Image 1 (cartoon, rainbow, N blue to C red):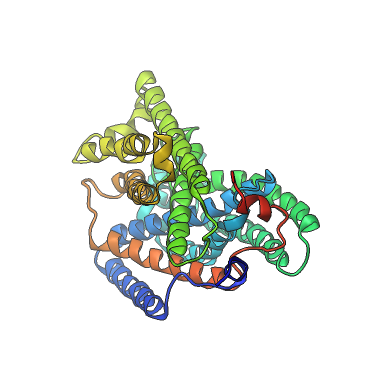
Image 2: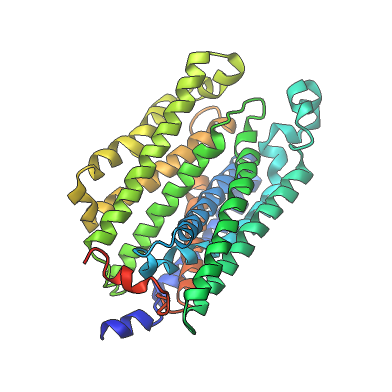
Amino acid sequence: MGNGEALIMTARLLDENQRRTLGILAAAAAAVLAAGLLLEPRRAWSALLMANFFFVCVALGGLVFAAIQRLSSAGWSALFCRVPEAMGAYLPVGAALMALQCFGVGKLYPWADSATVAADPVLRAKTAFLNPVSFFIISAVCFAVWYGLSRSLIRLSRAQDERDGADLSERAMRVSAAFLVAFSLTFTAAAILWIMSLEPDWYSTIYPWYLFSGLFMAGLAVMVLLLLLLHRRGLYRELNSHHFHDLGKYLFAFSCFWAYLWFCQYLLIWYSNLPEETAHYVTRMANGWKPLFWLNPIVNFALPFALLLPAGQKKRIRRLFSVCILLLFGRCLDLYLLVGPSVTIHPQFGWLEVGAFLGAGGLFILLFDRTFSAAPPVALRDPYLVESLHHHA
């Protein structure tokens, strides 16, 4: 098969048996979650929140990457931009699961309990924002904005299969700009509402940025893994060492950015030593959480930093693959440390949490595969495609 045929053929990440297996896995995870809601409802709702939020972040990370590439007129990534675009296919499922989460707010969020709010003047001052109705409305608005703008971006991308893409690229730039501005506002609200309000008496102005750094790092790691798997299946054979080097630089840079925000938040709260701020870290330094707390920067920063620092290592496919797996484990750990101590006194990561992550992950891959295979993997009339095909050649 020639290069031209490889560019225009539709392709799937999964074969029929793999799709069937993932479907069974998702159904099994739903059964596990249903059992958990009967046996350990508080822990089951937290497992659903963590798994769904993780893959919503992965989907948004891919879309943010695609929007940045479009807005900056980046040529090097034009070859594979349909991979991050297809990652947004999880958003409707994420919205449905977050709507389901509304039935569990009373189990997870102190602000949903009227007696707790009545006894806490801080919570009473926040009731306009922190209440079950706001949770539903703000969540619905966030998903509607993300999905609506992402669909516009995908439609413009797919239109480049039919006609020359110069004017379409201009329109895609405007949609990308709108998406990034809207995303910055909506994700800030979502980060505070969904995760930070698990501890409603505590706050950090760095928190939305901190969650964004993790979101983008998780999205990058999944995008690189998908690219490597598709490359192994014979797709995107035009990817060269310079493409992988640039992807490795992205992973390296955002690992450092995450570590910077992690350290800044910790240092400023440690230095000021105010009881209303230190409570967040006191909880994570006791009852068995401390080893996980210090493992977090090692997995998310120290090891990726050492593995990706040499320029040549960023070009090695196996090294990139292993770093992406490591970072995804680190992202799960970081999210667990954000949610877990608000739900259980001691670390508990077992059948409920594993089942929720596997189920949501199976749905994510199935939806990505269906969306990605619905169009050619490359927009042949993208004006930047030639530049991408000859990246650093």
